[in-house]
Image (cartoon, rainbow, N blue to C red):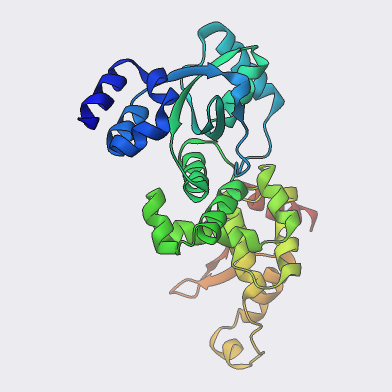
Length: 298
């Protein structure tokens, strides 16, 4: 009999359900959750509190103004998601950018999806929502991954299942949080890419990390060029030996040219010993131009 009463209440609309939510949850919780998950309702925008678990902290003012203008013209197309705290009181789960822009646009009400969640579920839902749908920078994604694992007690494997990413992706992002703050800031400002940061994260020496990062920014190195530079930093010094000179009459010339040009040089002799070639390796056009300037200056 109780379920028949619930179905009658659901038929009256979502507002009737919300006005008597606690009783309806005790009567038939699955039906209530299903109704909430499939319904959009307009509520007063001032009834929504910001989510304290929101991982995004920086909102570009120009981008916010553009979104606010769009909302003024077309309305808010994608509802935000909130959880009900009490009658006429809600807390944001996801959509803070849309909420802020809607306030800028002067909206009095806002369309919402209403969810029922405890604090841990709220945190997980907010972080997963942002990771999957928001244009977070790599550091913000890394922080979100780390918080999900720490505050929701998830392993790398469990997190990868939650967000639909490979375990290696989770590991690569969380490793970024071990980089020096200067490099993390450069990554947030998009002065280098995720590929650059991943390469830097593989360096144990902080001084080397900072030195390579400086080269990346000042010389505009590609990821491949940065990886080659790191490889040269990490390559162990080889003891001098007279044996290579005996087998390769051009070993001394190769070493001298390599030192002068800061590039790998190979002298190749033709089979008939009548001539040969000098091969100078370069990483990209910027590296090529650098070598050419050195040659011309000589």
